[in-house]
Image (cartoon, rainbow, N blue to C red; front, side):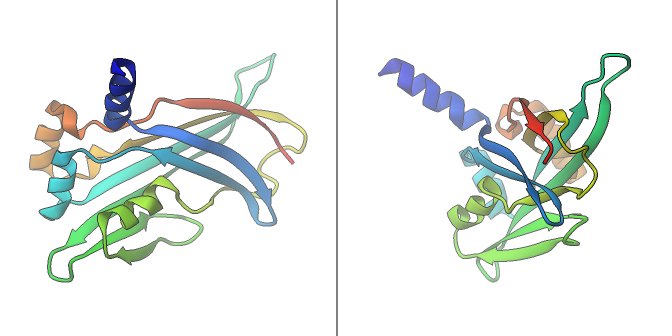
Length: 179
């Protein structure tokens, strides 16, 4: 029972990548991911008081070469912002700077509904068709973290010193054969 309690406490402190796959589609290569994490009390309280939280996903695909450095085929990042509007009592999730969609925003009644979109984001177009060489194997590196760089400057100082504001996944690595 103690081991289970420690594992649960560990999961609450970080982001776990529960699903990561790349899918070929007509318009390019899409990342299909799912994350498992909860916001601690301090982060929930911050959202309730108008602080916007940003979650950034970074992905990199490299093709190994024996004669030279690995070729970097794809290096992308996407940030999702969650905020709360006290007047409307709604949570807003906004995809920041998505080059394929130009960004979009969606509103939710509860924090759990808003967090569902962050934990299970839409398939993200990471590369256009033809960006990867068909049949080649690529090493994929993926991670997600709460991006403290987007916080207001006074909050950044506290966030860098407070472990409650450190929410990140370990880097997940896997291989993908381009289709």
